[in-house]
Image (tube, rainbow over all chains, first blue to last red; front, side, top):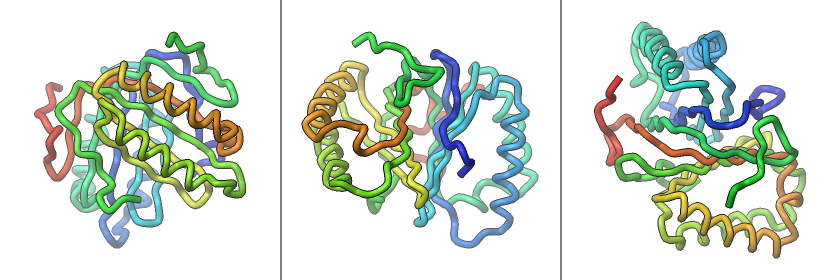
Length: 120
Length: 120
């Protein structure tokens, strides 16, 4: 976990990639791959931020936030290419689910950049 | 973590509540409150499923999935009411962010109920 685990985001709307995964046993280079993926995302135009957590049992959720669907597509193409070079996700994950969403409202405590009064 | 950490969801579109939080130190009844919240959500019309993970450092992400925005609003009203009775979120969380989103595409491995070919 980074020192500041919360992403600092602009006001909605923006887009989210919700990645849930169950790690395979063992660690054939996983940490290095994960680090490269974070570097790659951070350098990508339209990347807004990410939040990530993995439990001791191997189940984890990473949510990355993006300015547009086009930015997600561009990121995905690069990431898929890299992952293919690394012999594929099958090596790292027993199971994963990816859900691509448009964030419409956001609020929190303490009040942040993306806070707004809730309409209802 | 439940035995099956992945939510079994229908095909998109559906809605998501992404809840990121940093727990306060100590545990003044947190587990009981969290259990009641899960029971309350599960019993709510329009609840589709949820995925949740918290790291040893206290940072966690829970994503709950809903059939409609109206279902989220109804759930939220009930949950807020209960949490207020329990003396408020301030007691449980040092910091939290809630992002409400519309899921537009989903895919995974192994293929699940919500899988579909990606358009792009």
